[in-house]
Image (cartoon, rainbow, N blue to C red; front, side):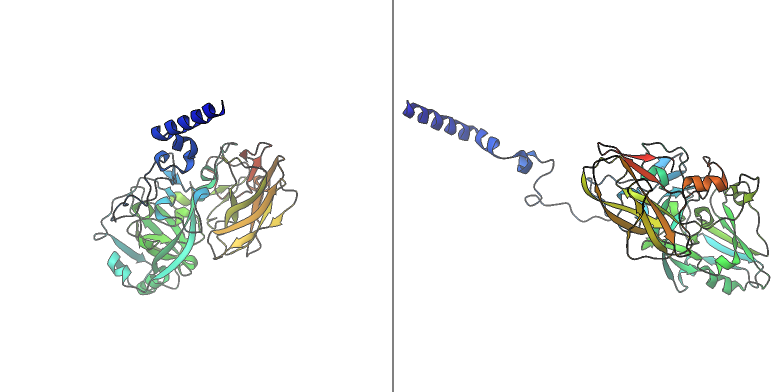
Length: 405
């Protein structure tokens, strides 16, 4: 009987070997090259060099178009502080113009001794400066947020780049600004002819006429061939496709600083020229639609302020009852995105996590209730709303956004 069993096992083993089934049963699918979607990279030559580098097809990272005039940056999928140029948020008022840089000029006139025109090549002949800073749309607030709102949908209208160009102060000195000049009008070369009044104090401080972003020429959606950069100021003052600067002794009261981009207050008054972006922070992970497990996690996010450097970021893991100081990831630059992190051991019970930024001026990011008390209920066109955001986690680990804090 024993001999028959041994002979049967031998025959079965031999049959499996000859058919290839034995190897299939013994080799886990996870490490079988026959079951992978792509060939073994050590056995097949890869693709050749190309004129332009592409992301891996495994990286699903893209902007989120909204209303055909806005596309938000995927903040939750980025690392470090620089936003890739092709992921920088977009906001335009009449489409993206096609401009020949060889025909484009910048005119400086008005209250100056010498009205001047500069070609793009003329601008590149001046000593260049490079500044790393964020640009944020003043309407970077989602008044229609739901529990299923992502970070990108919530406040994806902020991005950061390394900008290169010529200081505006240099060009104004060339033109010879008169002693009574106090303002200038910046005008774009798009179909909306976007215009904003800029105080001379800002123009002579850190304003730059930019022609490069992250080491290459500006992208068309970001103002190619030149744009105005006003570090720390609301996005629409950073006029794209810049073509004209008119110097004056008073603001020009354009549509975009009267009918738009003003903050109505509950008492009937209106905040005008409230152009500096206040300190803000947002947790980028864990957030919706993530589902987390009980145990250790690292809370990560970004903070920024138009008034200078981020001094500190505080994080709460119990719905705002207590706050812990997060670690800031360098470099910590003025008027720039700063990453923060805090280790967190989730105990499996429902809670909410949130962050608040404090900048070097002492300003602390407010709650939505504090903002509403001063400015009234936010609308779809709310400007300069920078509230603390909360992300809830239920007993199953599912993250959702909490619209009100």
